Amino acid sequence: MLTDLRILVVDDDPSVLEVLETYLTRKGFRVACAGGGLEGLAALEEGPYDLVLSDIQMAGCDGYALLRAARERAPGCAIILMTAYDERYPLSAALEAGADGYLSKPFSLAKFSLIFERAFWSALSRQDWWLAHDDGRREGIHA
Image 1 (tube, rainbow, N blue to C red):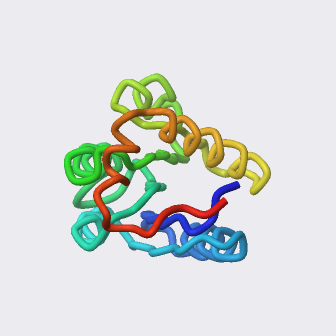
Image 2: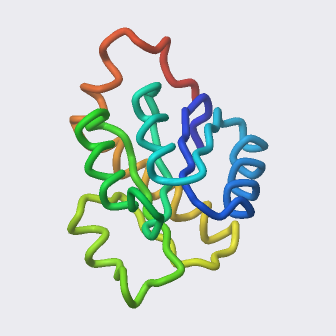
């Protein structure tokens, strides 16, 4: 798995933020957390991020609005949407909106890891990811 990735986790549930931040930090990633969609939008302005994990249902700015903003500001960024309401927000809608991955809550860390890696490798296969990471802002990604 690649390390030295910048990851933004956006969720209005503090326990989800804590679990994902701890897990991803232990894996060697640089993690920023935002407690809701509006905080997530502000964090995107401070980016760049290689991957965004966002809850879908949040007050003020939902995960779909955050996804659209991330695609505008960082087109190469991988995006995973999460929800506890998968009947209301189905996988097909998330993928049609442009998400690279989708998680139904609650989820195990094993399932999270699998979706996380798939989403990142999927984004890595897109030309827009390489264009976004070839502008001299970063020293590179280390394997």
